[in-house]
Length: 365
Image (cartoon, rainbow, N blue to C red; front, side, top):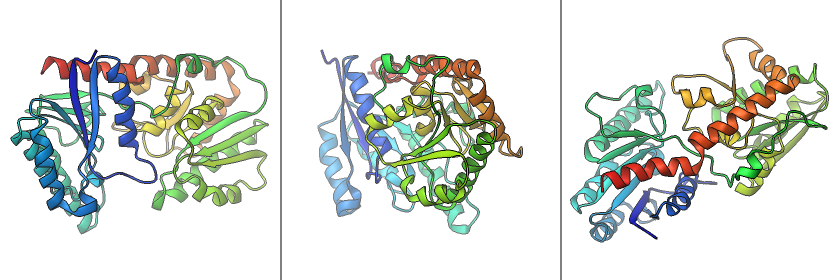
């Protein structure tokens, strides 16, 4: 029985996969079990321009009066170059139509950079993010609010809800990890950042895997997700001669991603410090894997409770040392996997996430 109807409002779609749209679909499914219907809508400004998109939104918003509209914010969803100047106008139209507005900050900080264009972009994003705080009824942050550099004391209408893995993770599959497994020890890398970060990430991964393979035999490196196929030749080149089997899978269905991660023994996450908003890291936790990652300003207690083994990027060969420890010590590896499984159920499952949403949606309706 549906007790409450809500709308998830998105900007332009990301390619080749749209993690925010997938987030909304998984959230919708979990909310349905709690009697809340979440319908996904878009403001298609990139198709016919902002004028027509905003006019169409005014018409639709009239039919949403009194409903919760949960607006998904990333800078690039509302601007092709990361200047989300019209995002405030979207929220103003919704508020003018009598809509209850929640904003989900998937981008929790403005973009970094030191060029003049970067500084201007940062100012534009900060302005949009702060104005959204002034306009919305509830702000949802995917990291704890105290971790944010721009948070102000008056912003009390906020809630912290971590992201979940955009994967079909079942209780039976996630709980199947055992202390020891025969055969190859499998190291997973889920997505490569791409762009200027590519070479650095590949170098870190290859260095760690080469180090581990010099002490442990029968290793397999599996790279999947975004930019994995584009980096296949570089992985093969840099690992040439190492006693490691390499498997590069490219983009997979969510079902195949889950199936692949479940078959692995550890996830390497080198795409910056681990955080409750980094879906490719949460995927490892969701699949009951030990995750090796760096700690940073956004790393909260929810992450440290999970099965995360931390390495220091500033310490030479530390990633390889930590990887070797996880691979060699079966009981340590199993304890990390168990901690990931418990954290998944407590914090990162879509059931847990939907419960957090349902609480504020129903309390404030």
